[in-house]
Structures are given as structure tokens and as C-alpha cells.
Length: 463
Image 1 (spheres, one colour):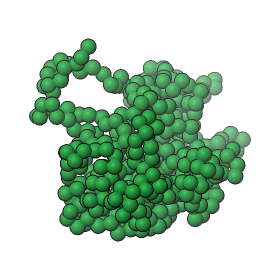
Image 2 (cartoon, one colour):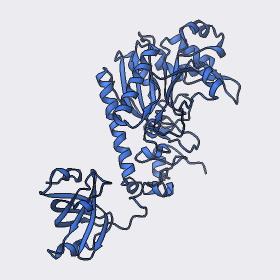
Image 3 (cartoon, one colour):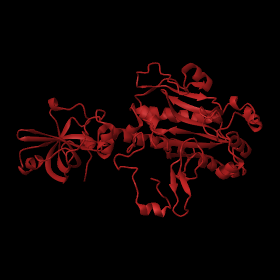
Image 4 (cartoon, helix red, strand yellow):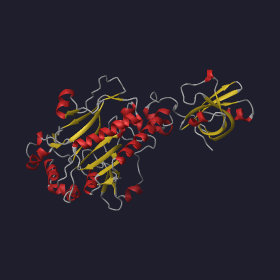
């Protein structure tokens, strides 16, 4: 039965079977050494001169070949111990070898950390790039974060619910990815920019506490550290105060850092709170970096930014637009002003953002739950009654049936994990990322499709 490399430290003197990849081969006269790696680690294997067929077989091995071998776990001589790896006190004395698959010479080095290799080449051969130990660690750490989140929120009575990816195209700030309907020619779905509307409708449904770790899609212009699809932790609560949402978030973040990133030090608990006005005046940004020493990678300076404006002027048109999203409620004292269309530019919202070391890592708010207030927001934004009815009738209708006060938050999970791991960009923590302009270099997507496919969808390409 197969053993993992990491298990050999408890199997001294035993004969075991290992399966994995060749990480390197060294010929020392009559002895041949290889390093064998699997998902758990790396170990040295020694092939003695006898029986003769073993060193002959081992002599043809090359890096990244897939093998199965059996052998005896021996303790290495004290002067030969490798203190750089957990299994460095032991080695395997090979007794049998089977080559399961050969490998061509990889086009990229998978034994280094990879930073020195051009990113386009790494992304083209991402299935090889992921073999390097740094990325293996990143993906496994990300899995641990996801599990911690699920366990924490489940203990706190949240229900994990999947919401649709295919929805209705509505104005939410970014350009939608559109998906044509074959069965209804000329009509389109939109890939969800976020679960915003669905999670609010779940609050109307009486589920009260919802969360999911979800893919979101935004067709944005080229940006170096953005992805067309990214991952959020999304959650919503019924009957919360702003403080309850923020405190729950804070507890979860602190738990993740302590449990999974113990080498990181949170500079201040509870997290400092700054108003939007304060942070813009003091730092010139709404995502301030509060680290005492910005060069100290282990310092995690979280802070809350609160009291954002409800509306702000569009720099191009001069018209009012929403500061975060149209569903964020104003503070209660401004509700009458919103109803009357007064003091719109000075109105303060119940929005809250979480910043970390100069990056926004989460944002949320208490939502509008009264249909007349939501309708008023869309009127302020310049939507006609017909347009409001066409695009948001499902929300306005739902809010007529006992919609509870509700609020929540969404984390940029890629960004948070990137900072906690000390990586330079989010592509280092995503298994199969795309370039800044949305291309998948590994599969060559996006790509052209056949005329037959276009005809089925009733689409013509304008040359």
C-alpha cells in the first residue's frame, strides 16, 4: 500500500511503497541517488550496485518522470543529514522500481520559486508551474482558509447557499459578461458580477444568515492586478446592526490570521475605525496603509473605513452616481432627505470597508429594504420609471412582502490571501489565472467559434 513521503519519519527500518515524481538524479560512481517528491514532501532515494537491474533502471531516470518504488527506510549518517527538509534525517534504500510515465524536459524550471521566470511562459505551462513548492503551498493554504471560513460561519448559524451564475443584466458598476440564449434568440444572460441581489432576496426568504465562497465576473478594462473572474466570500445577515457585521468579520479575520498565518502580527485589535472624510484628509485614499513600518511584511495593519457618502459626482458627466452600490442604505437620519431628494451630496451611507496594508480587502453595508427608498435611489441616478421596472421589478416586488432590515459584507478573497502570503499579485494564489487583459494563455481563450455555433445562437460577427 502506498505511503506518503512525509510518513517515512515514523517508519524507520520498514519497507514501504512510494509513488511520485523524480525531482533530480545524481550519479556517484557505483551509487545513484534520486530525489522523489509527492504532495507531502521530498525524500532522497539511494540505489545500491546490487541487484544490478536496479541501478541500470535508475540510470535512465530524468526529472519529472513518474515512478513507483519500494524500499527500506534508513536513518542517514549524521554528517549526511539534510536539515532543510522535514525528511532530511532519513533516506530510502531502493528495492524495486517501476517507471509509470516518462516526461519530456519541462520548458520551465519547476524547482525554483519561479519569480525569475517570465509570467507569460509560466501561465502558458501553468500545469507545470503549479508543481513548484511555493505554489503548491499557496493553493493548500487557500484551501485551509476556505475551510476555516466555512467552519466558523457554520458554527455561527450561517447557511451556505449557491446563487445563480446566469442572471439578468443590470447596472451594477462594471460591464457585464453576456451569455446568449439559444432558446430565446436575441436575449442574453449576464454572468453575475456579485451575488448582491440574490443574497438580499435570500433575506426576504427568511433564511436570515447566508454565505458562500463564490466566483464573480466583471468585464473591466485591462488592469495589471485584476482578473475577469475572481472569488469573494459573500455573506448577509437579517436584523443586524453595522457593528454586528463588522465585529463578526473582525473575529473571522483574526481567527484566520492566528490559525493559518501565525507568523503574521496584527498591529491593532480591535481594528481602528476612520471615517471616509478623515482618511481622505489624512492619507489621500480610502484604503490607508497604517503600518508603522511598511517594509515589515509580517505586520498586518487592518482598519475600518466608515461613513462614506451615499452619492458622488461622476467625473465625466458631472451627474450623481452611487458611491458603492445602489442598494446601500443611508444612515437612518438621512432617510427623509432621500425620500424628498434633498441634501443628496452630503448624505452619509451605512457602508463600511476593510483595508489592509493599503489595499481594500472587504466591503459591505446595511442595505435598503424598503421598496420606495430603493426606487428613489434609481430615480436619483437618472433611471426612468420604465427602466426601473424593467431592470429591478423583482427586487421592488420582493421588498413589498415583509423584507427584513439586512446587511452584510463581501471579501476579496484573492487579495486577502495574497497579502497574508506575502505574494506580489493575486495570480500567485489562483490555480489557473488569466492575464491582466483577460486571456488564458494555457488554453488560448478567448477563441473563435464555428459558424454553426454562431448560427445556433442567432449571432453574426461584424467584420
